[in-house]
Image (cartoon, rainbow over all chains, first blue to last red):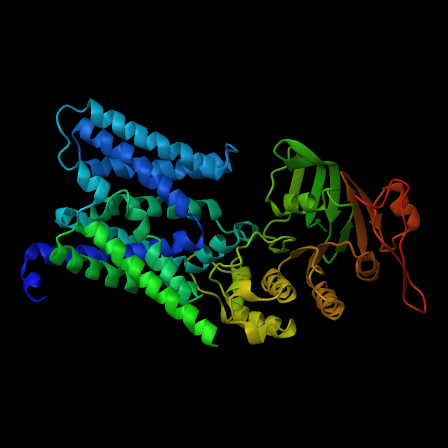
Length: 270
Length: 249
């Protein structure tokens, strides 16, 4: 156990996992309690179009993915609010469009896309220091937004119509948060990959919601559960030589199942 | 004195379908307006126009500058599994008093506590609101509507899910509040309407305004509002009237 801590790459992975857990614990609690997990799925897959565009233009795919992610988040919201398209249909359309564009751009790019697999399945060991800075910065911004606007966010998430009658700037806050959701997703794609990123934003939070019905406590518990499962996942990944993204998600599901079983048993006893 | 709320020739509805038409109405300070009418007649639509939740297709809506709203929705869109306690729900009604980035004032929080005690939900203030019974939840939402001491209190069916005893407690509180604020109340309970409200509006696509609080048989007949009639007498009794065009929907 001590020996792996001697490798700088592993320490960097631990740092990434820690920062990611804080950001995802916070944003994921919002996603889960507002029931917008499916919007998250839409944003994730639309951003694949951005990754493709990045390859095609020869720029950092994360930047183009971020643009695609934020635009799809706003697009999904606007389509359902203003254009009278049902939200789940709008998500389905964006989802498919993003994947299609991604495939087209990668096909058009000459040569082989070497780290495409990193984006699909994630590799925490490929995360650069710049990525860590971005995730940390985003974590600070998200924490500040939640700290200063907690009551407003909580009220809107619970009952948007009532919040509107109270003169709260519901749309501004909604669009800010959905953009934060999109950025969180995109900057975590490298860590666990497109296919698994939503699990970081839902599994620890759902586990936390088994334990508590308090929103603030839920945020803190989600962060703790996310930290434990990502550290455990990294260790498993090292010893069994399996991809880290998959082992992190696997650990978090195991933790979720243990918590759920424990609470179900306790409820039965009472 | 300037009216609190003025509507002129308002048309409104959902998805291009007109539900209310050519509605004009004014509400003064300390008014207590009862809004009655058949299901689907547009009572809730009217309320949502006043609250600014629906943009009217036509007409003008004027709300006196700086007026604060309190609102009790008929069906809350709220998610029963959402992590929010009774206390947090009630306090969310204070957000109109609070400036962005600031915290709530002490006075506001004390008022919230007092109101929760009055409506007998103080003991369960730490419970998740979604785990309350229907009546308790209705009282929590009522608390949320009243807690900011709004200028205009809008209540859509406040007596649903609430038993008769609680119901009369609620009306006592409303009468008390009415000296400080205007109240707009949608209700099917015409007995309550005629004993508490000051004026009545009957909404059935169009609006008919009746100054005073007496609901007459003729009034109901003329505007085809299938509501129950209450007779006041020494022995409490109810008489249900059937309309020619059918009381049932």
